[in-house]
Image 1 (tube, one colour):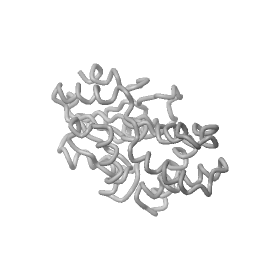
Image 2: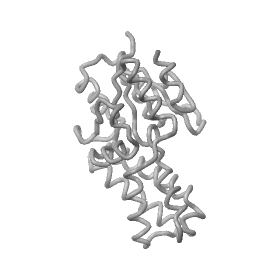
Image 3: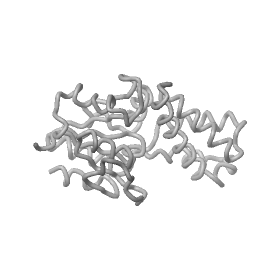
Image 4: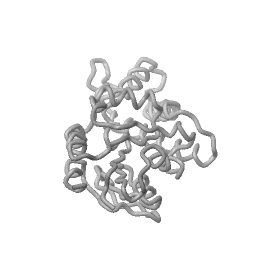
Length: 227
């Protein structure tokens, strides 16, 4: 069956999760952050993801904005930057306006021009996603922005992937699911989607029951792959 529907993870896939710390580090008076912003960004992202997995396992769900704050607090303390409330507030504000990766706007326009449905499926809270989509100017290329808040559990729970069929009424094999998270792409494969792993970091494939059908270094060639 041909692909009719392209579904994208948001954070790390369409939006550069390191751009908040990078932008803050360039601001005057941020010398302490400038010395370690990459470490802060990496710690922040890893804790954010780990907290979603743990909450999914324990059933202790909360909005993604909460785990985003919790992950940042851990990251700042780990680098000796805790206690700077102004820095914390600034990083959180920037996280709501993350940069899209350079190839993303053109890639989405090309998919829409070829008649494909395009949507986000994300752990993100609806208000977070709406803010980032608006800041990046992507709204005109998206048919929907789907959040796990509809089902109250984080990825990779099957209930999250179910949202695609519920929203668009399509069979699994008509869906191309795209994520920069290897575990997300692998789990979506096991669920039944055609998958692309945007392997921006050049990492090995995760040892999971499902393996991504396609591995790309970024999303620039995605319209060519779909066609």
